[in-house]
Image (cartoon, rainbow, N blue to C red):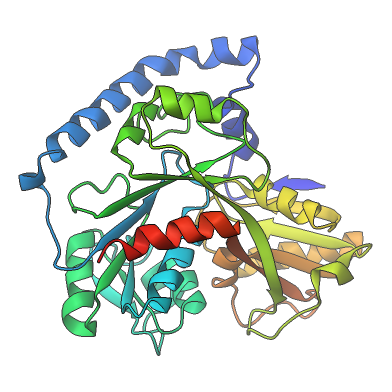
Length: 368
């Protein structure tokens, strides 16, 4: 059973952005192409403007930007977490800087975590910064629409000596020392168009600004992707990683059952991400058979009614566990319906092969 709620309109968007849309869909969506061209040209002009170093703000510490071309779902936040961990293991005092999308008072600049305590609620920090703060004890997390000011706050108040800029590829006002772009190996560039006809924030030629490409191969990699990157003059060879579930946890952090224990168990899953179907498919590859899939729009803030709906569906179809993402897990309220099955949060890491992990480590060490 698949349910899309909260105005997600997920199936329509997947068709609109897909490279495999049929002729009727391509004709139907063709009126959007001029708007995509205009949007792409505006973004190209903006990138050209900020290509002048004098128009960029510089910081006194190394800045590592992790971003993507697609509007979401490529895996940039797990890669940001992996880079922050590596830098911390090198002895750096690291801060992860994020915008904190759809949080209260988005214009404010604040420290989410000082490395020891989480100082803001999920609604004050945004869901992804809250998730990062929970995953990275000992590492500073700050939010701000002006990433340079947020980074300076972390440097001045917390003594940070390395910055990881989560979702920073299009934030060109801030100079960076390493510009990493994450690409979804199977989706690649989708229809190839910028918004609104396609899923891209910029034309693919923007990859020339990257200093390193990282491909998420969790669900595979298009055979033609490397040739396409070469034609775009993007940096090759790329590094590669896959998602890996490192554990299932209850919302209070208590370890849950092992993934293997869920084989043959009736499970529901919900996700409020850019591409919930990718999460559901990922669980399937671990042998988890999902009886009910519920997709919410990205960054959805859950209400009591949402969990009443989940409890009602679970009772009706005999669900024993409900699984969700870490990003959604930070927004689960303490008081849940009495009939709610146990909720499990899947802790997902970006797993690099040894040679790629060594290559990434060397790039980070070279920052000085």
